[in-house]
Length: 337
Ligand code: ATP
Image (cartoon, rainbow, N blue to C red; front, top):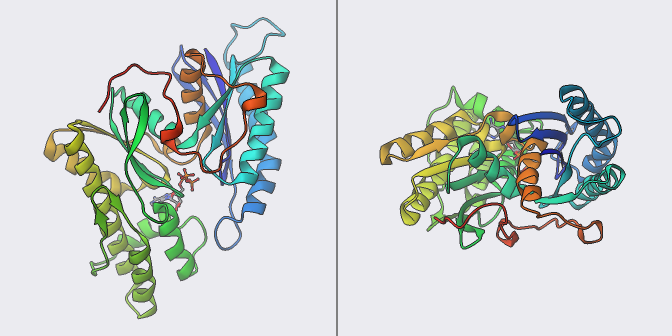
């Protein structure tokens, strides 16, 4: 089966083609880059409106050019999958409208994908893991997921902002452009440790206190490199601690990382070290599958379509607050953590 995926929950207009037989993913993305500040929902939606048709056309052209197994006039893909949520409503609506129109034009099924479950499934797919714990470290979210009794259960999560958004709030305060995570990573190279708040409660965690303290430290004259270094050490240690607790409590020996913050080398290093110490396998997908991308939507869309998990256009409404544990997992057998 060959599936077109369309992604546009916030900043990344993206379309991809996944061919299951070849296990090949082609991704075309067009990011929205704000001139100043963070992501402005209206500007992001305007970007989606302009960029989505273009990235879809490029992905379909790729499918037509790459594979010659279809008669002229046959659709180049067998299903269209789209991000149904969570995300910014104005962006989600544009992506859903494009996906519905395309599925109807090509006369193929439509698949509504949960963006957070896609962040998890792409790691599981690439690693060939059975039933891993997943640490989703993305912009607007941060949580630990494990499969149990037919659903991805939220084992732990942020009690306030997503991890990337927290980092971006600090860099906006400093006056750096969006996205802030890569700039924190670069400045951290020359930094030294200063103590900041560290808040973990069981498998939940909080970033608001550490972000306020980081801004205050910067305002008080602590060198920005030291604040960046210490932010990384604290925030990623918190994530590593809860990931280890989730592995320990579930008895699982596989961890996958998902989300844009997963591109950070220090986070990956801490998680890999923790897994090595306890004899667990760790997998972080390559960067193109960590940040928002339609490849993960196409890959999960293919699994869902293959198991008959498609959606009628009339029932394909978006959900800006779509949680991963709302999704009945139809595409895998009953093994649990
Ligand atoms: P979500 O998937 O929750 O909807 P999102 O749409 O914001 O989140 P992602 O692409 O998963 O998107 O993550 C973007 C975030 O990743 C931004 O906050 C950005 O600062 C952060 N980020 C990107 N690269 C790095 C890095 N090298 N180190 C730390 N953070 C990073």
